[in-house]
Image (cartoon, rainbow, N blue to C red; front, side, top):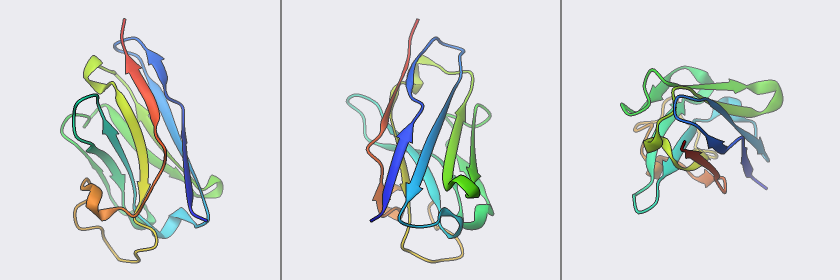
Length: 129
């Protein structure tokens, strides 16, 4: 059974940092795209970052580029999202997603949720003083 479990969310002051984790089970993340999405209150879910299959490429939304970093640890079957210089507008529920079981060389639209097949339950990130 495929499962994605996010952790690492919480309350942080503006300018602070958080490191989100997404641990996968039921499949091996190496061959699949792994993405992070977020949904703020009253807004649609948006793509934040993607690590393509075999970690060939990484992608970021304009809103987080230069502040967030996505990475993988194959040994732990885990993907991370290091978030620095956090702003109040980063407040949202953050979701991990994968395109497993779709095998392909490259995800077409890395930050489009329609590309992903399995989702975690989300972790709350609140940026506030």
